[in-house]
Length: 99
Image (cartoon, rainbow, N blue to C red; front, side, top):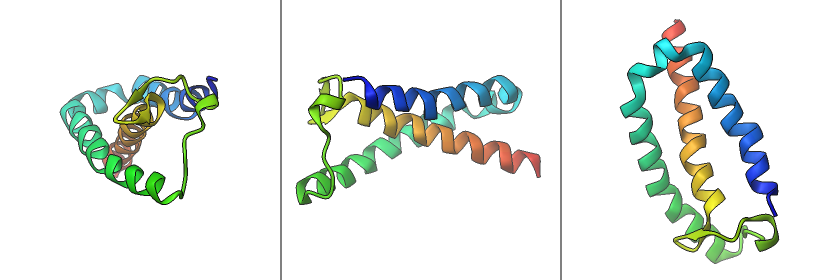
């Protein structure tokens, strides 16, 4: 039941936490950008997911999710869209800052 959420925690939330811990002096200046990136990521990803689910490209097995849905998608999928975009943005900022 919690498989998707567990994987998200391991591969998304944990790296975000570690990166923020070590690079908070850099990342704290970009909070508004991270929020904007997350917003637009969800905005565009929802259409992609609607199309993919509608065509049968992929699906969200109910037994792997919490059962909480937003816009007919599992909570975990929205969670993924938000936090993976933040993670990628954080990595981009850190790499660009180091140059």
